[in-house]
Structure formats: structure tokens, C-alpha cells
Amino acid sequence: MSGSAVQSSRPGVQIVHGAEQVRRTLLARSPELVTIDESAVAAASSVFGETLTPTAFVERVIREVRDEGDGAVRRIAAALGDHVGTTFEIGTAELADASRRIDPELRGDIELAAERIRDYHEREMPAGFDLPGLGVGQQWIPVDRAGLHVPGQAAPLVSSLLMAAVPARVAGVGETVVTTPVRSEGIAPALAAAAEVAGVDRVFGLGGAQAIAALALGTSSVPRCDVIVAPGNAWVMLATRALYGVVGVDLLPGPTETLVIADAAADAAEVAADLIAQAEHGGPASPIALTSDPGVAAEVAREVEIQLATLPRADVAWDSFEQRGGVGVVDDLAQAVELSNEYGPEHLCLLVEDPEALLPLVRHAGGVFLGSASPEVLGDYVAGPSHIMPTGGTARFASPVGVRSFLKTVSIVRLSADRAAALAPAAARLARAEGLEGHARAAERRAAP
Image 1 (cartoon, rainbow, N blue to C red):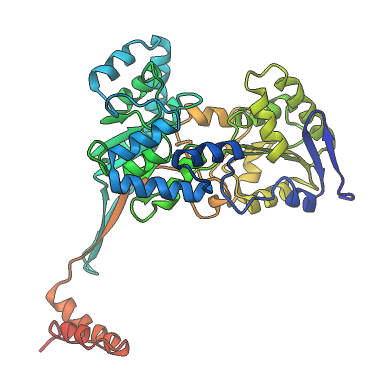
Image 2 (cartoon, rainbow, N blue to C red; image 1 turned 90 degrees about the vertical axis):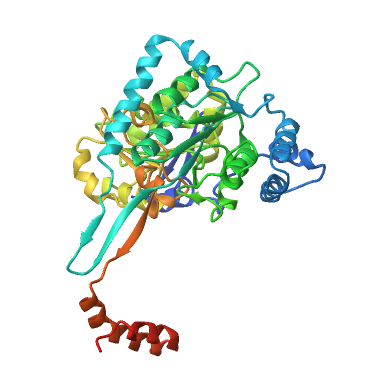
């Protein structure tokens, strides 16, 4: 395709022509997984009365929670303006009362989502093995306690609670602990109902880096967890990253990403709707479409403008489009998939006439959504696979949250005396090659006389 001009439709959806320009603009990633605006940095710095970078702020939070426990958690939360009750934990009676206030139809929706999530992840459970002939095997064992952070400042993300807690329960985790920020009127009824349906054991009204530090380190109120699943804002992600190794971390979910590949048969209004559905998360999100049809590109850009005109969160969505979104025009669909593989999006939506033909070409994506009837928004809520997926290009090596996020393997060695005797000489020679005489002698004690 000739040309590499960048155009902008009003009031902000850019249309980019040519694969190289698409790489340099729409698919260019910041070296940082998250961005934090200056006002948020200033507000965080005020907690400690000195100017701190986001990373330094999070490190300070972790240090103080480690040293002071609940006192630090309460002080930091109050300084940030978060509501914290007389106790961090939301009692079972309060949860039950809130759950009873939910609309019955919404309760049914939560139960439907949980059922589909459970069905999917039950089929994902791995099996151990035992190889008597070799004298080895493997067991899968769930962790004792999982910490699940649920975003809740802008809106209570009921779906995120289900998408983390249900797989944890399927995996057989001993105890599931949820942290989520709450308002002065208490936990949202929908969140309380979701916790009940998912079988969550304990819920704490905490958010931000201090919540992650409490889950990872433990305090007198918050139990220390073995693994953490923590979709959330930039502060949550930075805290989770900083605590990796202290606690198990499966993913570092950042701002959401959707890459839609569309052909001439695609409905431009559907493409725009799918992009907007993710753009309204903010963060900023990355709403990107690739097409080989310049006419489709123009129609999608126009549709975004039309649909955003009536969207309640239009300002948030426009911010995502202006910072990290747009439409790219490339040579063909194969090139679009190649660019997608380089980018490794969280969500890859194939709004093309024959999505099955493109699926074998996909190597790097958190989830793939095939065709108009499989929009990413259904994956957000009720399709079944967890919607907590790798972002920031980590789909090159990471997987969505699933039962394996809460399981660990244990290797089993069960050798017969005859097999040990046969293997011991090789082990002894290898040990001496490494200069480890003690290892060699231990092996030789099992050798045949």
C-alpha cells in the first residue's frame, strides 16, 4: 500500500495508513506498563509530605505496611480520602444484608455468569500423572489462600470478582480473600451478592497499593495470602509488581486493550461499539481497529464520533482514543494479524467474514473473539473464560487467569532400589563433573554393591 499519511477524524479518532505507520503510532507501546497523571502523583505524594515518583510512593506504602501493619493501612487510606470502616473486614451479616437488597433479575444474571465461568474452568483443571516405569510423577496442589483485589472506586466491578473467585474455587483454594474499596454507605449489593455466589470466604473494604501490601504481607486484620490476582488501577499494578516474589503473582493487568480486525463485510457500527466498550474503561485503554478497506476505516471513525455523542462516559472514552486509539489501514488481513501478533493485545476481535480462517495465524493474544456474535463484551461478563487477561504485550508469554493461577505442581520421585542403583553411577559422575564430591558420594551409597 502506498503512502503513510496520518489523518484525524473529528474530534479525535486518527486513521493511520501503512503497516509501518501503524507500528509507529497505534501499536507503539510505552516502556512503562502504566501511566499516572500528575494530579494523581501529587495526591499520592501528599500522603507522606514529600514529592515521590509513583514507584517510590508504592515502595513507601509497602515498607510502612510491613513495619506497622493495620495502622499504616488505615493512615494511608485516610490520607488518600478512602472510606475505611471501624474494622477493615465486612462482616457476614453486613454482606448478607447487602446481598438481599439486590434486584432479583440481576442476581439471576450473576448466577448465570458464575455458572458459565465455573463450567469453563472445571474443564481447564489439569491432571497429575504417575509413571511407575520411570519412578516419577507430578501432583497439582492448590494454594492455601488467594487474595483477590476487585476494583471499585469508579464502579463496583462485579464481573471481576466472579472472574477471579470462581476459578480459585474450582482450583480448590483453601480460602479466598477479597479486597475492594467501598463507599461510606457500605459495600455495593451487587458485589456482596457476587461474593456470596462465588463462595468468597472473607471481604475487606480496602483498595489501592495498601490493600495489595496487606494481602501480600499480612496484618493483624488481613491474612497473608499465597497468590494475588489484582486487576485495578496503576497503583495496584505497581504494588503487585513490587511484591512479586513475596507473594505469587500470575499477571500484572494494566489498562485494557482491544484490537479489532475488520474486513469489508464488517458492520462499522459494531466495530465502533466494540472499541467504545473498552475505551470507556479509561486508564487510558487502547481501542484499536485494523482493516484493509479504507472505506471501513472512515465509517468506523465516523461511528465512534456518533456513538460517543450520547455515551455517559464519553470524556473518558475520548481520552483513550486520543492517547492510544485509532484505526489502521493495512494491505490485507494476513498483515493485520501479523501486526496483532507483534502487538500481543489483551483482546483480539475478528470481525471478518471468515474468522476461522484467521484463527490459525494468531499466536499472541489474551483472548480471541470470533465473529459478530462473539463480541468481547460478552467475554467481559458471561461467556465463561476469565476476563482477567495479559496486557501491555505480556500475551507473548502470559495467559489469562484460570485455575492454574491458583495451583502449583509438586514433583514426585518414587524410585525402586534397582532403578536407583542403575541411575546412581551416572548421577555420581555428573556430580563430580560439577566438583560436588558430597553429591557423588550420596549417589554412590545407592549404587549396587
